[in-house]
Length: 259
Image 1 (cartoon, rainbow, N blue to C red):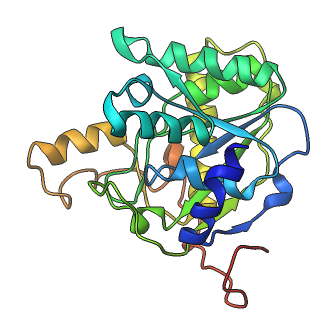
Image 2: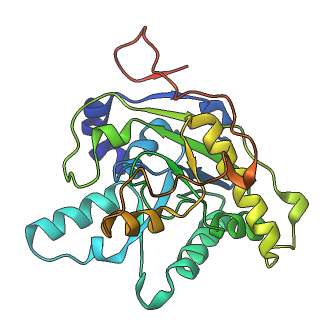
């Protein structure tokens, strides 16, 4: 019902193309780890999947008053967003518990390892919550790259503009070799870096080895974009950057398609 109500409008606006759909398992739990370029990421990705996927969202989205507040809450529920109370410094734990419950039920759980939207289209250092989620649940991690959503909805723009956007789905990552090691911070960082490296490989994004929230704070403080986040390793974990480019959409079809 959710996609029946919301999906047609979003499909018409964005005409999403997708590659790697076969990497999404037909059943069983899986963590969908995506880059994050725009608010609409959480709305567009479910359009191309046969299975329901849920993301978490700020509880404030669901508690607004007036017509605008009710419309926002209804839309967030319509696209499968789960409200999480992020007050009191408990955001990470609340997100983890929500994800673990979803995975225990055999579902798909979407998470943004960067923790917030990229301020400039680059890929930023991942937070280790995604690694904890993977090791505690035992579920595979499937990297997903959103392509062009930042062009459709630049930061600061409430309403996105209609344009074609894409989704590239990478091969599942198995971290079962680290079972029982979810409290080892070095393992958590290694797993997180591996996930971000995979995201970098399929998205073609430039990598910056600082947190996106730190970069946003620097930009807000007046630090020039060319000065912030330039002295960084070429890829997560200090590895050499893969030789990739931003994926291009298929040319042969004007509407939604699967390569």
